[in-house]
Amino acid sequence: MLDQSAIDELFDVLARYVRIRDRAVHTTFKTPDGEVETAAFKGLFHLYKQPMRSRELAESLNADPSTVSRHVAQLVDMGLVRREADPDDGRAILLVITDAGRARVEAMRQVRRTAMDRAMSDWTDDELWTLVGLLGRFVDAAETVLAPPCGKTGLVDGEALVKGQK
Image (cartoon, rainbow, N blue to C red):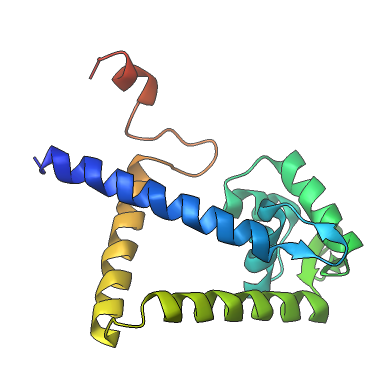
């Protein structure tokens, strides 16, 4: 069994990072048209990799399809995403990032790179790659146990744990 105080410290450090990231993201996602929900831009990052159907996007975001639909509508209205007929199934609709959407993702990535470069200016590339590897390994394991994809049951029953059951 792992050192329980180290696990507690890990969660504290991760929570602190998430708070810092959320503050930064909130500022980054303001647009000339107003503020856009952070979750909508998360979808944009997924569509940057490849076009997909709304249902697939919801699954990849581990989000409710109705929420994703609202976010997609916002991105379409902003001209960052367009809907196209799926060439494999003309009845289905694919969500495709536009050139403006690609430019927005690249701009946000550059802001993120610049911030991380400044925050980690005294790190070596080896240290950075070590962190990337360890975080990747941690996230893979945590996703399986703590937050499986929508509709799946995790290995941890949070309600039972809170009640002191095992």
